[in-house]
Amino acid sequence: MNSKVTTPAGQECLQGLMRTWFEFERQLGRVPVIQRLERGRFTLEDHRRLLLHLRQQVVEGARWITRGASSFDRRYTDVRSMVIDHAREEHRDYEMLEADYVAAGGERQALIEGERNAGSEALHAFMMYRASQPNPVDLIGAMWIIEGLGQKMAGDWARRVEAATGDDGCTRFMRYHGENDDAHLDKLYALLDRVCRDAADCRAILRTARVVARLYVLQLEEVDHD
Image 1 (cartoon, helix red, strand yellow):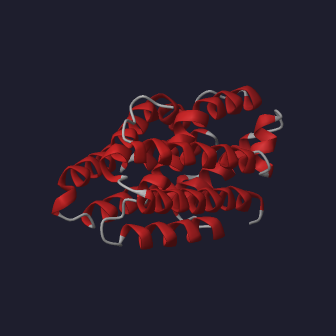
Image 2: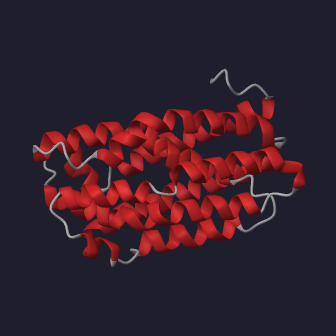
């Protein structure tokens, strides 16, 4: 158990989040585009398609976060400040993704004009709904999945993309998150201690984590369906 989470409620919630993460990993392993990546059959075209489908979620990410920050009342002023700082750090991440897409041979305008797939639509709608609720502490569950993906998998994905395609100039976005999302998870540990006060808070956080995990997998499944 992570020593950075010290309260009993926070520790219990962290255990549940870890179980949710392990299930998320199993679900990711069944997604065709991720299977190709892990088995060395990934191509530059796969990479372009993956970036195209991820862009909408990345562009919208700062909106979810700032909407959530605005929904916290004065009791959570410190939480609101932390969440705003996080949004400021990530609100231009899409620019790295766009640069990678062009470096992989894609046309920037095609990327910009790309539409959300079914999973991205569902994820965006759910996140904006939850972020609009009063004091949406359950967003910790969403951030656990999304930031955890960066911290635990993005660096490995970048190396696999480079090995499969022979191109090391189109993975800046993945490498950045693989190298920097440790600090973001540290903030989540602090938030767990701050806002997870009882079993009801824990249930809400875990439910949102499970929903976001499933919708993120759906978003990746859709890479092969357009």
